[in-house]
Image (cartoon, rainbow, N blue to C red; front, top):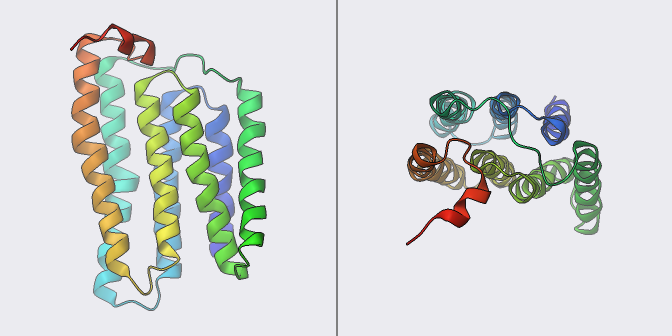
Length: 209
């Protein structure tokens, strides 16, 4: 079952690469949160029920509900429907993200990981690379935030590999995700949105000290 969830997670990365609507990005982020909820439930079977419950609640509430809702609120407030054209075409984005998944699998083989850990590492590392790629190749600042969230999901998935022994590490990762994404970046985006309607990175060159 865990393998199925990881496979679906990989497909969300590919779908994000060809998506041109920001609402689609948000839906994929919400789906990734649900998938991480399922993976967490299946993987962290050796920790106490209290820690498992807290991690599951944090995952489903913040990654699947709160953060996607907050991003949708930003889009609605700034009246943004579609993202601007990316620097790289959607076709090549699909090829590149597929390459990330293959590269991650090859690296996991060189690391000598067992079968289950290899699958976790492959998807997690591919998510890290995809998040960085989205940040680099998209123009809108809010899309950069979504790329950061994809990257964070990869970090969270990597932390699950040792979560059975260090559950607090997973909790700290989620809390950091919540603090940076919702508080700091949320205030930043709202300030930018009040000044620049389209919130493109090209507008940052107009900012003065």
